[in-house]
Length: 111
Length: 115
Image 1 (cartoon, rainbow over the protein chains, first blue to last red):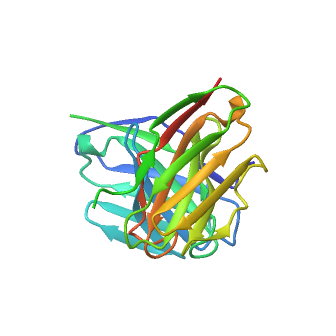
Image 2: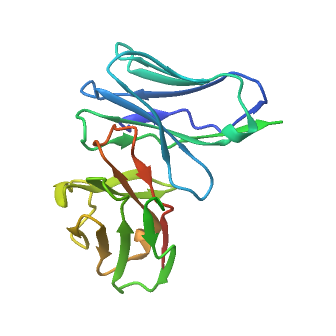
Image 3: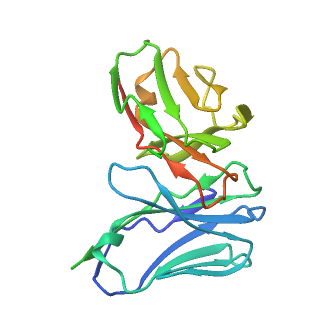
């Protein structure tokens, strides 16, 4: 079993929909939780990060961490075609430490 | 700033050959990371440097892989000898504040094919 499991997708939604992307993990030592967005044939870009449990909001994006359930989510409100990309979750147990990545969920937002 | 620069963008080589991938981080960034991405294994952190010093190389798959950072503006990832299973996209990333800093930037990647 992998340390980080991500909903495999692909996911296809109409423009304006609310999108929920999810990962579960097994290592209770993880403290830092990240979401990356990767457009086709591009490098990943760090979208959001959260330390420990709780929520973090940035515009249309909300990252949520539930350490008791070992479950993290990324919500995208009012999704746009430009949000179409692969989203990767990543986790680490130390700042500036080795991260473990999920396999990614590919999202398509249709106009 | 031009962002993280990687070269070559594409590399096709034959099994057994030496491959050298190059990276120029963003000026002023003191962390540099090397990642590998494949369909089978996803995105893996291979090694990272802080102030040109390797901090964690536990992700390097085996002794055929080596990485160096001789100065703040240049790093190499070398595979010798290369094998078909090394075929992947290799990303370099740099940041000014560690792995979870929101200033981490990835390069465009080098797509390596080993025949």
